Length: 553
Image (cartoon, rainbow, N blue to C red):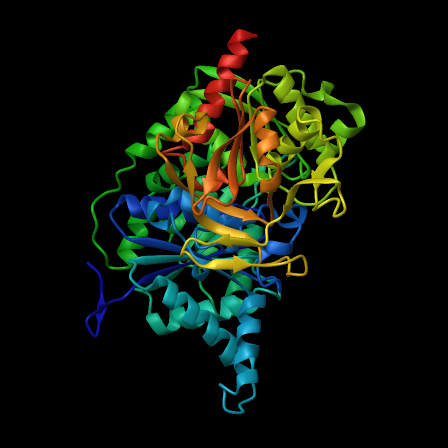
Protein backbone atom coordinates (compact mmCIF):
# COMPACT_ATOMS: atom_id res chain seq x y z
CA UNK A 1 0.00 0.00 0.00
CA UNK A 2 2.90 2.33 0.56
CA UNK A 3 5.94 2.76 -1.69
CA UNK A 4 9.32 1.87 -0.24
CA UNK A 5 12.84 3.06 -0.94
CA UNK A 6 15.71 1.01 0.55
CA UNK A 7 13.18 -0.81 2.70
CA UNK A 8 11.84 2.42 4.23
CA UNK A 9 8.19 3.39 3.74
CA UNK A 10 8.07 6.69 1.87
CA UNK A 11 5.67 9.34 3.01
CA UNK A 12 3.40 11.19 0.62
CA UNK A 13 3.07 14.96 0.73
CA UNK A 14 0.07 17.21 0.13
CA UNK A 15 1.03 20.87 -0.07
CA UNK A 16 -1.84 23.24 0.65
CA UNK A 17 -1.69 26.81 -0.62
CA UNK A 18 -4.16 29.67 -0.85
CA UNK A 19 -4.82 32.35 -3.43
CA UNK A 20 -6.91 35.43 -4.24
CA UNK A 21 -7.49 36.49 -0.62
CA UNK A 22 -6.41 35.46 2.86
CA UNK A 23 -8.66 33.88 5.51
CA UNK A 24 -10.16 31.35 3.10
CA UNK A 25 -9.96 28.59 5.68
CA UNK A 26 -6.89 26.70 4.48
CA UNK A 27 -6.31 25.37 7.98
CA UNK A 28 -9.82 23.97 8.36
CA UNK A 29 -9.81 22.55 4.81
CA UNK A 30 -6.43 20.90 5.42
CA UNK A 31 -7.53 19.54 8.81
CA UNK A 32 -10.78 18.23 7.31
CA UNK A 33 -8.86 16.45 4.56
CA UNK A 34 -6.60 14.96 7.24
CA UNK A 35 -9.69 13.72 9.12
CA UNK A 36 -11.03 12.00 6.00
CA UNK A 37 -7.72 10.35 5.15
CA UNK A 38 -7.39 9.19 8.76
CA UNK A 39 -10.91 7.76 8.55
CA UNK A 40 -9.66 5.63 5.64
CA UNK A 41 -6.89 4.17 7.78
CA UNK A 42 -3.92 6.35 6.82
CA UNK A 43 -1.40 7.61 9.35
CA UNK A 44 -1.58 11.39 8.93
CA UNK A 45 0.57 14.22 10.21
CA UNK A 46 0.20 17.93 9.50
CA UNK A 47 2.55 20.90 9.28
CA UNK A 48 2.08 24.68 9.11
CA UNK A 49 4.75 26.83 7.47
CA UNK A 50 4.35 30.48 8.43
CA UNK A 51 6.03 33.21 6.33
CA UNK A 52 6.47 35.89 9.01
CA UNK A 53 9.87 36.79 10.52
CA UNK A 54 8.89 36.20 14.17
CA UNK A 55 10.56 33.03 15.42
CA UNK A 56 7.16 31.95 16.77
CA UNK A 57 3.86 33.70 17.54
CA UNK A 58 4.54 33.77 21.28
CA UNK A 59 5.18 37.51 21.55
CA UNK A 60 2.64 38.59 18.90
CA UNK A 61 -0.57 40.37 19.85
CA UNK A 62 -3.68 38.15 19.60
CA UNK A 63 -5.38 41.10 17.90
CA UNK A 64 -2.94 40.70 15.00
CA UNK A 65 -2.44 36.99 14.83
CA UNK A 66 -5.20 35.30 16.77
CA UNK A 67 -4.54 32.93 19.64
CA UNK A 68 -1.21 31.33 20.36
CA UNK A 69 -1.79 27.58 20.36
CA UNK A 70 0.36 25.54 22.73
CA UNK A 71 1.41 21.98 21.93
CA UNK A 72 2.06 19.27 24.50
CA UNK A 73 5.83 19.79 24.24
CA UNK A 74 5.39 23.45 25.15
CA UNK A 75 5.81 25.04 21.73
CA UNK A 76 3.96 28.27 20.95
CA UNK A 77 2.47 27.74 17.51
CA UNK A 78 -0.01 29.01 14.95
CA UNK A 79 -3.69 28.55 15.77
CA UNK A 80 -4.09 26.21 12.76
CA UNK A 81 -2.31 23.52 14.77
CA UNK A 82 -5.36 23.64 17.03
CA UNK A 83 -7.52 22.71 14.04
CA UNK A 84 -5.14 19.87 13.19
CA UNK A 85 -5.26 18.43 16.71
CA UNK A 86 -9.04 18.79 17.01
CA UNK A 87 -9.75 17.13 13.64
CA UNK A 88 -7.07 14.43 13.37
CA UNK A 89 -6.50 12.01 16.25
CA UNK A 90 -3.01 11.05 15.08
CA UNK A 91 -2.15 14.76 15.40
CA UNK A 92 -3.24 15.03 19.03
CA UNK A 93 0.35 15.53 20.20
CA UNK A 94 2.00 17.75 17.61
CA UNK A 95 5.43 19.21 18.43
CA UNK A 96 7.72 22.09 17.48
CA UNK A 97 8.52 20.09 14.32
CA UNK A 98 4.99 20.69 13.00
CA UNK A 99 5.15 24.48 12.82
CA UNK A 100 8.02 26.70 11.81
CA UNK A 101 8.36 30.23 10.51
CA UNK A 102 10.63 32.07 8.11
CA UNK A 103 12.21 33.62 11.20
CA UNK A 104 13.08 30.23 12.70
CA UNK A 105 14.51 28.95 9.40
CA UNK A 106 16.71 32.01 8.94
CA UNK A 107 17.79 32.02 12.61
CA UNK A 108 18.92 28.39 12.37
CA UNK A 109 20.68 28.83 9.01
CA UNK A 110 22.50 31.93 10.25
CA UNK A 111 23.53 30.08 13.43
CA UNK A 112 24.99 27.29 11.27
CA UNK A 113 26.83 29.85 9.14
CA UNK A 114 28.30 31.49 12.24
CA UNK A 115 29.55 28.09 13.43
CA UNK A 116 31.22 27.48 10.08
CA UNK A 117 28.95 24.55 9.14
CA UNK A 118 28.82 25.70 5.52
CA UNK A 119 32.63 25.72 5.15
CA UNK A 120 32.84 29.29 3.94
CA UNK A 121 30.15 29.03 1.27
CA UNK A 122 28.03 32.02 0.28
CA UNK A 123 24.68 31.48 1.99
CA UNK A 124 21.70 31.98 -0.32
CA UNK A 125 17.94 31.48 -0.32
CA UNK A 126 18.51 28.73 -2.86
CA UNK A 127 19.83 26.24 -1.91
CA UNK A 128 20.48 26.87 1.79
CA UNK A 129 17.13 28.25 2.98
CA UNK A 130 15.07 25.94 0.75
CA UNK A 131 17.19 22.93 1.74
CA UNK A 132 16.56 23.70 5.42
CA UNK A 133 12.81 23.92 4.76
CA UNK A 134 12.79 20.63 2.84
CA UNK A 135 14.80 18.89 5.55
CA UNK A 136 12.33 19.93 8.23
CA UNK A 137 9.30 18.88 6.17
CA UNK A 138 10.78 15.45 5.41
CA UNK A 139 11.82 14.87 9.03
CA UNK A 140 8.35 15.76 10.32
CA UNK A 141 6.74 13.37 7.81
CA UNK A 142 8.87 10.39 8.79
CA UNK A 143 6.80 7.41 9.92
CA UNK A 144 3.51 8.69 8.45
CA UNK A 145 1.70 7.68 5.28
CA UNK A 146 0.76 11.26 4.42
CA UNK A 147 2.03 14.65 5.54
CA UNK A 148 -0.30 17.59 4.82
CA UNK A 149 1.83 20.73 4.61
CA UNK A 150 -0.05 24.04 4.81
CA UNK A 151 1.88 27.06 3.53
CA UNK A 152 0.69 30.28 5.14
CA UNK A 153 0.00 33.50 3.31
CA UNK A 154 -1.40 34.05 -0.17
CA UNK A 155 0.32 32.98 -3.40
CA UNK A 156 1.94 36.08 -4.85
CA UNK A 157 3.17 37.38 -1.50
CA UNK A 158 6.93 37.83 -1.49
CA UNK A 159 7.19 36.45 2.06
CA UNK A 160 6.05 32.92 1.21
CA UNK A 161 8.21 32.42 -1.90
CA UNK A 162 10.97 30.37 -0.19
CA UNK A 163 8.34 27.92 1.14
CA UNK A 164 6.69 27.64 -2.28
CA UNK A 165 10.06 27.09 -3.95
CA UNK A 166 10.86 24.32 -1.44
CA UNK A 167 7.49 22.72 -2.24
CA UNK A 168 8.25 22.96 -5.96
CA UNK A 169 11.58 21.23 -5.46
CA UNK A 170 10.08 18.46 -3.35
CA UNK A 171 7.30 17.89 -5.91
CA UNK A 172 9.93 17.59 -8.64
CA UNK A 173 12.22 15.33 -6.62
CA UNK A 174 9.52 12.99 -5.32
CA UNK A 175 7.35 12.76 -8.42
CA UNK A 176 3.60 12.98 -8.95
CA UNK A 177 2.84 9.76 -7.05
CA UNK A 178 4.40 11.07 -3.86
CA UNK A 179 3.66 14.81 -3.81
CA UNK A 180 0.74 16.91 -4.94
CA UNK A 181 -0.51 20.45 -4.50
CA UNK A 182 -3.98 21.46 -3.36
CA UNK A 183 -4.78 25.11 -3.95
CA UNK A 184 -7.64 26.99 -2.28
CA UNK A 185 -9.10 30.00 -4.04
CA UNK A 186 -12.13 32.25 -3.84
CA UNK A 187 -14.92 32.19 -6.42
CA UNK A 188 -16.79 35.40 -5.61
CA UNK A 189 -20.49 35.92 -6.25
CA UNK A 190 -21.26 39.30 -7.82
CA UNK A 191 -24.78 40.16 -6.71
CA UNK A 192 -25.35 42.90 -9.29
CA UNK A 193 -24.49 40.47 -12.09
CA UNK A 194 -26.15 37.51 -10.41
CA UNK A 195 -23.26 35.19 -11.17
CA UNK A 196 -20.07 33.68 -9.82
CA UNK A 197 -16.74 34.79 -11.28
CA UNK A 198 -13.92 32.39 -12.09
CA UNK A 199 -11.31 34.92 -13.21
CA UNK A 200 -9.70 35.43 -9.74
CA UNK A 201 -9.09 31.67 -9.54
CA UNK A 202 -7.62 31.62 -13.04
CA UNK A 203 -5.23 34.43 -12.13
CA UNK A 204 -4.25 32.74 -8.87
CA UNK A 205 -3.32 29.52 -10.68
CA UNK A 206 -1.44 31.59 -13.26
CA UNK A 207 0.55 33.08 -10.35
CA UNK A 208 1.37 29.56 -9.16
CA UNK A 209 2.53 28.55 -12.62
CA UNK A 210 4.81 31.56 -12.81
CA UNK A 211 6.88 30.08 -9.99
CA UNK A 212 6.86 26.56 -11.44
CA UNK A 213 3.95 25.04 -9.52
CA UNK A 214 0.97 23.31 -11.07
CA UNK A 215 -2.07 22.71 -8.89
CA UNK A 216 -3.27 19.08 -8.88
CA UNK A 217 -6.46 19.87 -6.98
CA UNK A 218 -8.41 23.10 -6.68
CA UNK A 219 -10.74 23.70 -3.75
CA UNK A 220 -12.87 26.67 -4.71
CA UNK A 221 -14.54 28.55 -1.86
CA UNK A 222 -17.78 30.48 -2.23
CA UNK A 223 -20.82 31.61 -0.29
CA UNK A 224 -23.03 30.59 -3.24
CA UNK A 225 -23.48 27.36 -5.15
CA UNK A 226 -20.98 27.19 -7.99
CA UNK A 227 -22.55 26.09 -11.31
CA UNK A 228 -21.06 23.06 -13.04
CA UNK A 229 -20.25 25.25 -16.02
CA UNK A 230 -18.07 27.44 -13.79
CA UNK A 231 -16.05 24.50 -12.43
CA UNK A 232 -15.62 23.15 -15.98
CA UNK A 233 -14.34 26.56 -17.08
CA UNK A 234 -11.92 26.65 -14.16
CA UNK A 235 -10.66 23.18 -15.04
CA UNK A 236 -10.16 24.15 -18.71
CA UNK A 237 -8.13 27.26 -17.97
CA UNK A 238 -6.09 25.89 -15.08
CA UNK A 239 -5.08 22.46 -16.45
CA UNK A 240 -6.78 20.71 -13.54
CA UNK A 241 -9.03 17.77 -14.34
CA UNK A 242 -12.72 18.65 -13.85
CA UNK A 243 -13.35 16.16 -11.03
CA UNK A 244 -10.42 17.67 -9.11
CA UNK A 245 -12.08 21.11 -9.00
CA UNK A 246 -13.86 20.77 -5.66
CA UNK A 247 -16.47 23.40 -4.73
CA UNK A 248 -16.49 24.14 -1.00
CA UNK A 249 -19.49 26.22 -0.05
CA UNK A 250 -19.87 27.96 3.32
CA UNK A 251 -21.11 25.37 5.81
CA UNK A 252 -23.48 25.58 8.78
CA UNK A 253 -20.69 24.08 10.89
CA UNK A 254 -16.99 23.55 10.25
CA UNK A 255 -17.38 19.95 11.43
CA UNK A 256 -19.43 19.15 8.34
CA UNK A 257 -16.48 19.91 6.04
CA UNK A 258 -14.89 16.41 6.27
CA UNK A 259 -18.24 15.01 5.10
CA UNK A 260 -18.48 17.56 2.27
CA UNK A 261 -14.97 16.81 0.98
CA UNK A 262 -15.60 13.06 1.14
CA UNK A 263 -18.92 13.37 -0.71
CA UNK A 264 -17.12 15.08 -3.58
CA UNK A 265 -14.52 12.34 -3.77
CA UNK A 266 -11.47 14.38 -2.75
CA UNK A 267 -9.92 11.54 -0.76
CA UNK A 268 -10.46 9.09 -3.64
CA UNK A 269 -8.72 11.44 -6.09
CA UNK A 270 -5.75 11.78 -3.74
CA UNK A 271 -5.37 8.03 -3.18
CA UNK A 272 -5.54 7.42 -6.94
CA UNK A 273 -2.82 10.00 -7.55
CA UNK A 274 -0.72 8.44 -4.78
CA UNK A 275 -1.30 4.89 -6.09
CA UNK A 276 -2.60 3.87 -2.66
CA UNK A 277 -5.41 1.50 -1.78
CA UNK A 278 -7.27 1.96 1.51
CA UNK A 279 -10.84 1.11 2.63
CA UNK A 280 -13.65 3.72 2.31
CA UNK A 281 -13.76 6.41 4.96
CA UNK A 282 -15.73 5.66 8.13
CA UNK A 283 -17.12 9.10 9.00
CA UNK A 284 -19.77 7.97 11.51
CA UNK A 285 -18.15 10.03 14.30
CA UNK A 286 -18.34 13.21 12.21
CA UNK A 287 -21.99 12.58 11.32
CA UNK A 288 -22.73 12.25 15.04
CA UNK A 289 -20.87 15.49 15.79
CA UNK A 290 -22.83 17.42 13.16
CA UNK A 291 -26.15 15.89 14.23
CA UNK A 292 -25.56 16.69 17.90
CA UNK A 293 -24.47 20.25 17.16
CA UNK A 294 -27.38 21.11 14.88
CA UNK A 295 -30.09 19.35 16.85
CA UNK A 296 -29.59 20.81 20.30
CA UNK A 297 -32.36 20.59 22.91
CA UNK A 298 -31.28 23.59 24.98
CA UNK A 299 -29.49 26.91 24.76
CA UNK A 300 -27.50 28.89 27.32
CA UNK A 301 -26.07 32.38 27.30
CA UNK A 302 -22.41 32.44 28.27
CA UNK A 303 -20.49 35.68 28.67
CA UNK A 304 -16.77 35.62 28.00
CA UNK A 305 -15.06 38.57 29.67
CA UNK A 306 -11.83 39.21 27.81
CA UNK A 307 -9.44 41.82 26.43
CA UNK A 308 -9.31 40.81 22.77
CA UNK A 309 -13.01 40.70 21.98
CA UNK A 310 -12.60 42.50 18.64
CA UNK A 311 -11.10 39.35 17.12
CA UNK A 312 -12.85 36.04 17.76
CA UNK A 313 -9.73 34.11 16.65
CA UNK A 314 -7.99 35.44 19.77
CA UNK A 315 -9.98 32.84 21.74
CA UNK A 316 -10.30 30.22 18.99
CA UNK A 317 -9.64 27.10 21.08
CA UNK A 318 -11.89 28.36 23.88
CA UNK A 319 -14.73 29.01 21.45
CA UNK A 320 -14.37 25.54 20.01
CA UNK A 321 -14.12 23.88 23.44
CA UNK A 322 -17.45 25.50 24.36
CA UNK A 323 -18.96 24.28 21.08
CA UNK A 324 -17.68 20.78 21.89
CA UNK A 325 -19.30 20.98 25.33
CA UNK A 326 -22.53 21.98 23.59
CA UNK A 327 -22.21 18.95 21.31
CA UNK A 328 -21.76 16.67 24.32
CA UNK A 329 -24.81 18.13 26.11
CA UNK A 330 -27.07 18.83 23.09
CA UNK A 331 -26.87 22.52 23.96
CA UNK A 332 -26.49 25.59 21.80
CA UNK A 333 -23.91 27.71 23.60
CA UNK A 334 -24.49 31.37 22.81
CA UNK A 335 -21.20 33.14 23.47
CA UNK A 336 -21.35 36.88 24.09
CA UNK A 337 -17.97 38.60 24.22
CA UNK A 338 -17.75 41.35 26.83
CA UNK A 339 -14.76 43.70 26.82
CA UNK A 340 -13.37 43.78 30.35
CA UNK A 341 -12.49 47.46 29.86
CA UNK A 342 -16.21 48.15 29.38
CA UNK A 343 -16.97 46.46 32.71
CA UNK A 344 -14.46 48.80 34.35
CA UNK A 345 -16.23 51.77 32.75
CA UNK A 346 -19.87 50.69 33.01
CA UNK A 347 -19.97 48.18 35.85
CA UNK A 348 -21.11 44.58 36.14
CA UNK A 349 -24.66 45.34 34.93
CA UNK A 350 -23.35 44.17 31.54
CA UNK A 351 -23.30 40.62 32.98
CA UNK A 352 -26.87 40.54 34.32
CA UNK A 353 -28.22 38.16 31.65
CA UNK A 354 -25.41 35.62 31.91
CA UNK A 355 -26.14 31.95 32.64
CA UNK A 356 -22.39 31.43 33.02
CA UNK A 357 -19.27 33.60 33.04
CA UNK A 358 -15.88 32.66 31.64
CA UNK A 359 -12.74 34.75 32.13
CA UNK A 360 -9.97 33.61 29.78
CA UNK A 361 -6.22 34.06 29.79
CA UNK A 362 -4.31 37.18 28.85
CA UNK A 363 -1.44 39.46 29.79
CA UNK A 364 -0.98 42.99 31.08
CA UNK A 365 -2.94 45.47 33.15
CA UNK A 366 -5.40 46.76 30.53
CA UNK A 367 -8.87 45.52 31.44
CA UNK A 368 -7.67 43.30 34.28
CA UNK A 369 -9.75 45.03 36.95
CA UNK A 370 -12.81 44.32 34.80
CA UNK A 371 -11.93 40.63 34.96
CA UNK A 372 -11.66 40.85 38.77
CA UNK A 373 -15.08 42.50 38.88
CA UNK A 374 -16.54 39.75 36.67
CA UNK A 375 -15.16 37.05 38.98
CA UNK A 376 -16.65 38.84 42.00
CA UNK A 377 -20.01 39.20 40.27
CA UNK A 378 -20.13 35.47 39.47
CA UNK A 379 -19.11 34.59 43.03
CA UNK A 380 -21.71 36.82 44.68
CA UNK A 381 -24.58 35.94 42.32
CA UNK A 382 -23.69 32.22 42.37
CA UNK A 383 -23.42 32.15 38.59
CA UNK A 384 -21.23 29.30 37.22
CA UNK A 385 -17.72 30.65 36.78
CA UNK A 386 -14.78 29.24 34.86
CA UNK A 387 -11.50 31.14 35.11
CA UNK A 388 -8.55 30.14 32.94
CA UNK A 389 -5.00 31.33 33.67
CA UNK A 390 -5.53 35.10 34.07
CA UNK A 391 -9.10 34.18 35.01
CA UNK A 392 -7.71 32.26 38.00
CA UNK A 393 -5.64 35.28 38.98
CA UNK A 394 -8.77 37.45 38.80
CA UNK A 395 -10.71 35.06 41.03
CA UNK A 396 -7.92 34.85 43.60
CA UNK A 397 -7.56 38.63 43.75
CA UNK A 398 -11.34 39.09 44.10
CA UNK A 399 -11.48 36.69 47.07
CA UNK A 400 -8.34 38.25 48.57
CA UNK A 401 -9.78 41.76 48.49
CA UNK A 402 -13.42 41.07 49.29
CA UNK A 403 -13.38 37.98 51.52
CA UNK A 404 -9.88 37.82 53.05
CA UNK A 405 -9.70 41.56 53.76
CA UNK A 406 -6.48 41.99 51.78
CA UNK A 407 -7.66 45.22 50.20
CA UNK A 408 -4.38 45.95 48.42
CA UNK A 409 -4.07 42.46 46.92
CA UNK A 410 -2.88 42.30 43.31
CA UNK A 411 -0.58 40.52 40.91
CA UNK A 412 3.04 41.64 40.64
CA UNK A 413 2.59 41.46 36.88
CA UNK A 414 0.58 44.69 37.10
CA UNK A 415 2.00 46.17 40.31
CA UNK A 416 5.52 44.97 41.26
CA UNK A 417 5.43 46.84 44.57
CA UNK A 418 1.98 45.72 45.73
CA UNK A 419 1.49 45.28 49.49
CA UNK A 420 -0.15 41.85 49.13
CA UNK A 421 1.30 40.03 46.09
CA UNK A 422 -1.17 37.14 46.05
CA UNK A 423 -0.07 36.41 42.47
CA UNK A 424 3.65 36.53 41.73
CA UNK A 425 6.28 35.52 39.20
CA UNK A 426 7.08 31.88 39.69
CA UNK A 427 10.86 31.46 39.74
CA UNK A 428 11.15 27.68 39.86
CA UNK A 429 9.07 24.69 38.84
CA UNK A 430 9.47 21.07 37.80
CA UNK A 431 8.76 20.33 34.12
CA UNK A 432 7.16 17.22 32.65
CA UNK A 433 10.51 15.43 32.58
CA UNK A 434 11.25 16.12 36.23
CA UNK A 435 13.82 18.84 35.56
CA UNK A 436 13.97 22.05 37.61
CA UNK A 437 13.29 25.14 35.50
CA UNK A 438 14.29 28.57 36.81
CA UNK A 439 13.83 32.18 35.71
CA UNK A 440 13.67 35.72 36.99
CA UNK A 441 12.01 39.01 36.06
CA UNK A 442 14.69 39.70 33.45
CA UNK A 443 13.98 36.53 31.47
CA UNK A 444 12.79 36.96 27.89
CA UNK A 445 9.05 36.98 27.36
CA UNK A 446 9.24 34.45 24.55
CA UNK A 447 10.02 30.87 25.41
CA UNK A 448 10.62 31.34 29.15
CA UNK A 449 7.14 30.75 30.45
CA UNK A 450 5.94 27.62 32.12
CA UNK A 451 4.85 25.80 29.00
CA UNK A 452 3.30 22.58 27.72
CA UNK A 453 1.66 19.50 29.20
CA UNK A 454 2.35 18.92 32.88
CA UNK A 455 0.84 16.75 35.57
CA UNK A 456 -1.63 18.11 38.08
CA UNK A 457 -2.89 16.27 41.16
CA UNK A 458 -6.50 16.92 42.17
CA UNK A 459 -7.76 16.86 45.73
CA UNK A 460 -10.13 13.93 46.36
CA UNK A 461 -13.54 15.28 47.29
CA UNK A 462 -13.12 18.47 45.24
CA UNK A 463 -15.56 19.40 42.48
CA UNK A 464 -12.72 19.28 39.95
CA UNK A 465 -11.80 15.75 41.05
CA UNK A 466 -15.41 14.65 40.51
CA UNK A 467 -15.44 16.31 37.08
CA UNK A 468 -12.30 14.57 35.83
CA UNK A 469 -12.95 11.33 37.70
CA UNK A 470 -9.28 10.82 38.56
CA UNK A 471 -6.53 12.22 40.76
CA UNK A 472 -3.78 12.80 38.16
CA UNK A 473 -4.51 14.85 35.04
CA UNK A 474 -2.31 16.34 32.32
CA UNK A 475 -3.06 19.77 30.92
CA UNK A 476 -1.11 22.40 29.01
CA UNK A 477 0.34 25.59 30.48
CA UNK A 478 1.33 29.02 29.16
CA UNK A 479 2.07 31.56 31.89
CA UNK A 480 4.68 33.35 33.98
CA UNK A 481 2.73 34.15 37.17
CA UNK A 482 1.25 31.85 39.83
CA UNK A 483 -0.57 31.94 43.17
CA UNK A 484 1.77 33.01 45.96
CA UNK A 485 1.92 30.08 48.39
CA UNK A 486 2.43 32.47 51.31
CA UNK A 487 -1.22 33.47 51.02
CA UNK A 488 -2.81 30.06 50.55
CA UNK A 489 -3.76 29.61 54.22
CA UNK A 490 -5.52 32.97 54.47
CA UNK A 491 -7.27 32.39 51.15
CA UNK A 492 -8.53 28.96 52.22
CA UNK A 493 -9.90 30.47 55.44
CA UNK A 494 -11.76 32.96 53.23
CA UNK A 495 -13.50 30.13 51.33
CA UNK A 496 -11.12 29.54 48.43
CA UNK A 497 -10.19 25.88 48.14
CA UNK A 498 -7.00 24.65 46.47
CA UNK A 499 -8.33 21.75 44.40
CA UNK A 500 -5.23 20.94 42.36
CA UNK A 501 -1.46 21.22 42.65
CA UNK A 502 1.54 20.68 40.38
CA UNK A 503 3.38 17.34 40.25
CA UNK A 504 5.83 18.42 42.98
CA UNK A 505 2.90 19.92 44.98
CA UNK A 506 4.65 23.31 45.01
CA UNK A 507 2.29 25.29 42.75
CA UNK A 508 -1.45 25.94 42.87
CA UNK A 509 -3.14 24.65 39.70
CA UNK A 510 -6.88 24.72 40.48
CA UNK A 511 -8.98 26.72 42.92
CA UNK A 512 -12.68 26.51 43.81
CA UNK A 513 -14.92 28.75 45.87
CA UNK A 514 -16.66 26.55 48.39
CA UNK A 515 -19.87 28.53 48.97
CA UNK A 516 -20.89 28.28 45.34
CA UNK A 517 -22.60 25.68 43.12
CA UNK A 518 -19.90 25.80 40.40
CA UNK A 519 -16.86 28.06 40.70
CA UNK A 520 -13.64 26.65 39.22
CA UNK A 521 -10.48 28.35 38.02
CA UNK A 522 -7.42 26.66 36.54
CA UNK A 523 -3.89 27.86 35.96
CA UNK A 524 -3.64 25.56 32.95
CA UNK A 525 -5.46 25.85 29.62
CA UNK A 526 -7.93 22.94 29.25
CA UNK A 527 -9.21 24.29 25.92
CA UNK A 528 -6.10 22.95 24.18
CA UNK A 529 -7.09 19.33 24.81
CA UNK A 530 -10.75 19.52 23.82
CA UNK A 531 -11.99 17.88 20.61
CA UNK A 532 -15.38 17.76 18.83
CA UNK A 533 -15.67 14.00 19.06
CA UNK A 534 -14.73 13.63 22.73
CA UNK A 535 -15.26 17.08 24.26
CA UNK A 536 -13.58 17.94 27.57
CA UNK A 537 -14.95 17.07 31.04
CA UNK A 538 -14.35 20.53 32.53
CA UNK A 539 -16.20 22.41 29.79
CA UNK A 540 -18.97 19.82 29.70
CA UNK A 541 -19.54 20.18 33.43
CA UNK A 542 -19.42 23.99 33.08
CA UNK A 543 -22.20 23.99 30.47
CA UNK A 544 -24.27 21.53 32.55
CA UNK A 545 -23.94 23.96 35.48
CA UNK A 546 -25.04 26.83 33.20
CA UNK A 547 -28.13 24.85 32.18
CA UNK A 548 -28.97 24.23 35.84
CA UNK A 549 -28.45 27.92 36.67
CA UNK A 550 -30.76 28.90 33.82
CA UNK A 551 -33.44 26.42 34.93
CA UNK A 552 -33.35 27.75 38.50
CA UNK A 553 -33.70 31.31 37.27
